[in-house]
Length: 301
Image (cartoon, rainbow, N blue to C red; front, side):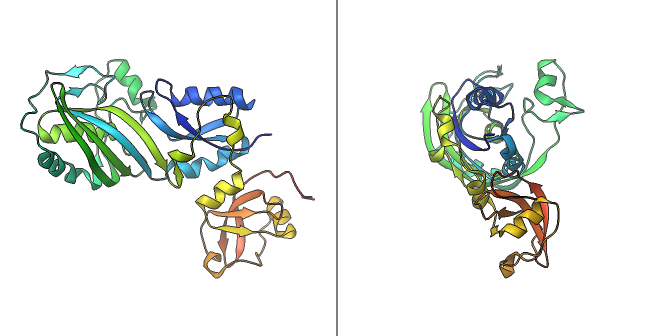
């Protein structure tokens, strides 16, 4: 069984599910999942889990993210990105300056209420929002609270087709960069949409660690224990503690730091063999399993 985490640099023109399909063939397993969808036009970091490591993906989906994006001001589209149809004619953007644009970005930074793009994957009464749009239905998604930690203006380019902005955005999970482009254009009175998007970070994982989607990808499979150590505090188990956890018991962990004795979790429990045994919580130093991971070494009898 091949278990681990892959950091993939997703190319443009393929869906996140398409990446999963290719990795299934490369890895020879059907059990492949991803944390955090990227649209086909988007590129950048996509985190995949294989076999039992798919259990880690739950804890990756909600991590903060960083994006590099290009926003075009002067035209709104039906999808809030370049793949949609124009909504109305081009607006006059001659009055826009870098100072005016920067001032309009400020209200879109911090804890904000955001209405997701209608072509998002959010479910409305059990049906994907983008499917409802495709079927010609009219509806309005409910706003949600998101956090935009930083929304930095990197470059401003004036042109006949509008004003192009290169931006960097650090945000909470669930933030739609397309919606930021739309709302920025709306606030400036000229419309706006996204023309390029690249995800460069998910939690502690950076795009510089990602690999191309090719035949060499599986050589870069990350060990589940190493990934868990990057995500959570970790405790080293001895043989008896590992066996008790694998048997569903709640052992008292001997070599447990004081700061870890009462944590709702997750804590990465690493077996004496170096493998990830599970994610646990603790109460008064007594461990309770949140998620178990199969291991290959040692006797669990």
